[in-house]
Length: 261
Image 1 (cartoon, one colour):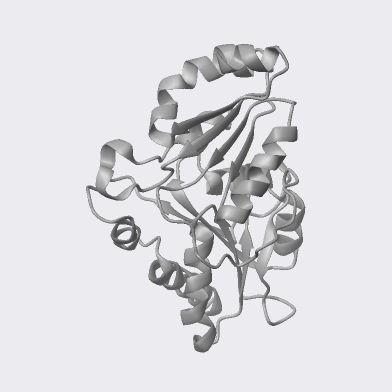
Image 2 (image 1 turned 120 degrees about the vertical axis):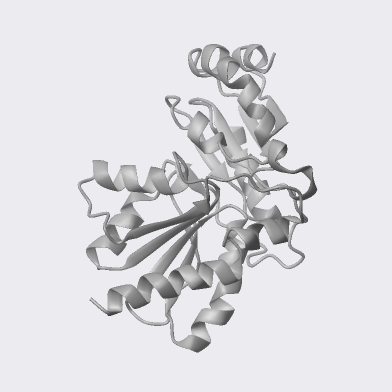
């Protein structure tokens, strides 16, 4: 129905749980992508979903939809970013667009009340490093932005100089920024509430490989290949190391191991 509406010039937004979007994969292929019509898909319950349990975890939406030509994949980290993402999707007419966001409460105090407009393939720097060259740059996708920012409260007093970016796009990724950081010798960590296989981190690795950029300094943190049962979303993130403490541990491990080389 949305594909038909889009073909008629209407701008449909289709809201669906991330885990249920897999049921529409063939329709996205046949009716939306193949027809080149701009349907906008808004995926709630992306990542871990708390009490709904494993059957509802949204862990494969990036993997599924990144394959379609002219598709654009976004993630919103908070309410101002969701509004900006939706505005971008409203004006994107070259193909399908997909935005993901979690089953959670929006943060009461967003890090930016006014956010830059969404431009395909442009990340948003939220916390710059203090020095000219950071020890590491975190590219956080979606709601993991706030866990990454919380991790800085632990890392900064310990002497780690880390920049935090809201990646915003999994397709396309910010290849220009990645190239700058890689050529400067900066370590990179991608963080996502999604499976590693075919996820945001994979998008980064593949884009760098296609651009003949070194990938040995790029590290990934995401959902492990195991089922996580009912609990609070916060506890589920902590269980698999995707909370602030887990991100801080990962950063220390990466930076300290490089320092010992």
